[in-house]
Amino acid sequence: MCTFLTYQKLFHLISLGYNYTPSELVFGTLLRSFSQYRRLPCQPRFCDVELCQYSVRLALQGHDILMATMLNGAAIMDGALLLIASNESCPQPQTSEHLAAVEIMRLKHIIILQNKIDLIQESVAINQHESIQKFIQGTIADGAPVVPISAQLKYNVDVVCEYIVNKIPIPVRDFVAPPNMIVIRSFDVNKPGAEVDDIKGGVAGGSILRGVLRVGQKIEVRPGITTKDENGGVKCTPIFSRIVSLFTEANELQFAVPGGLIGVGTTIDPTLTRADRLVGQVLGEVGELPDVFVELEVI
Image 1 (cartoon, rainbow, N blue to C red):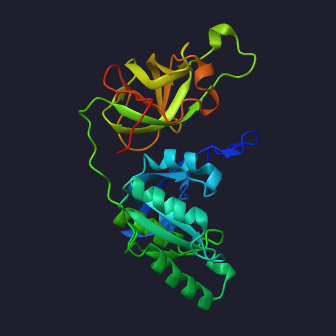
Image 2 (image 1 turned 120 degrees about the vertical axis):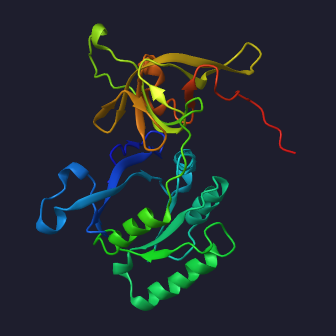
Image 3 (image 1 turned 135 degrees about the vertical axis):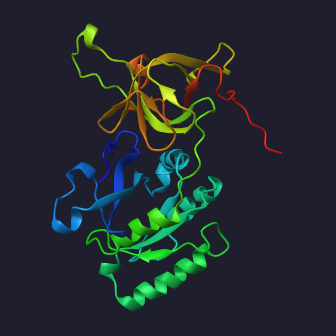
């Protein structure tokens, strides 16, 4: 399940959920995936384990009212798992929307999961498989593998792990360019009633697209605080801050590189980061971020 999945009933939104999943190889053969590598059971057939890839799962909701959340998460993906329920007709509206989003984000590595096969007969699964092939024909997902699974009963989950390891290559990372990170979550980590001297700055969570972030580095967040001027025009004020901590899961870092999900502790006023208020913004080196535009003309 997703680590930070929260429900915001007031706005009928669901926040982006994510966690880490290492894929292990046992004697050269992928057997299973564990949600926490440190909890690996020491059984005879699992004692000689080689960690072949450490990946991050993003849970992107399928309902049309959550498209903004989905697009924000898709911006940092290296590949996508398109989940289709086998007990429903294909395509569902949200399935078409997600595939369109994948094409917009230019994700080339896609694996289609035909889920809930334990609820239908074999003939129904075969017919839906044909419908899926017709649906993806001519799209960016044309030719993508379709894996029948049952997430509830864990049928073919090992096959999905093998596809992730072997079919989705790790992209080349740029460690030299100025750092650039897309914010997909932001938090206020202070507890109610905390003393003034104990208050900590806001935390931004996301994935570094390029460059390296270091503790103590001065950073900028754009577009920052958005307000309106006296004429009603949109005014964006960048947020300047400093990195005080870097975390990935429970591991504290001195520097962070592209790939994976990073939590960046800052000196930003926590009221600006609570409840995902920085979602969709860009964090990076001062003066090196893209310009902010409030109007776009498409010709």
